[in-house]
Image (cartoon, helix red, strand yellow):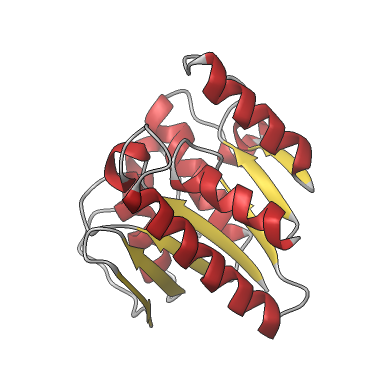
Length: 190
């Protein structure tokens, strides 16, 4: 079983000052979720895009639980504009990854735009996972787009909603509203 995370950045999970109540709630529910999956699937592996916020919390929980994870980095310079402390955490997590993939260096996942790099990183993660864990409050953005891609594929999604304070599984039904975020970047959903 391969599980991927898509998640909000710090402002939507309590802010940059940690620990905080929302971030701790997300971390605890993510830990319980991954521990439960690991119990059922001892061969569990994970994929994270290594973005600030939920992606990095996911990596930290994988390390705590001994779950090997792939760091699906959208492009090599991802942390270049981050504060030094944040860069340091990012590099510590990368060193503990079972595998690091620079997604933009794969020809079929390359984009010349920042948004394209992010969307194609998420597509790569979905292409290499069986289950999506979405730390998502239902608002629009990259996390919503990834959830939409997963739904379109009929993927099972486990949603951790920090705004509603709920955790649940949704069985995806292919949905198509005519808009495909990947089309904006010249990529196709597969």
